Length: 105
Image 1 (cartoon, rainbow, N blue to C red):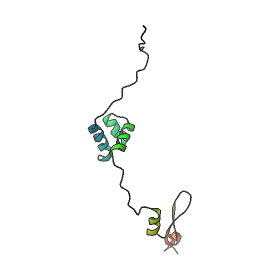
Image 2: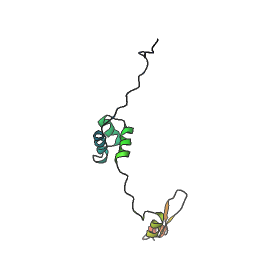
Image 3: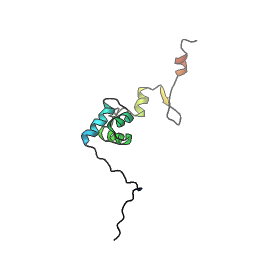
Image 4: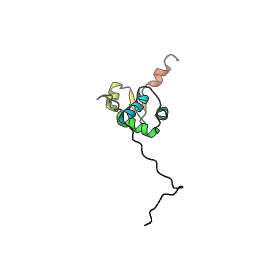
């Protein structure tokens, strides 16, 4: 029987590397505690930036919510002079022209 043998010019797919959890935590620590950028930290430990970002997403807990009062209604209640206008959701302050012009008249 003829067995197919890879020729010298055929590209061989690289093996997927597996890294221990301690290595991943140390790499993520460079970003979180040492304030390295993802790019520099990935280069320092010899992995792709995407791998480091994936580890970061899995290992770092999401930030805590701002609280129950972090709603639009609560912001409007806390700052009644603010009104949300525009399709882009920008905030405009009422009477800002008068406040900005005080002392110039």
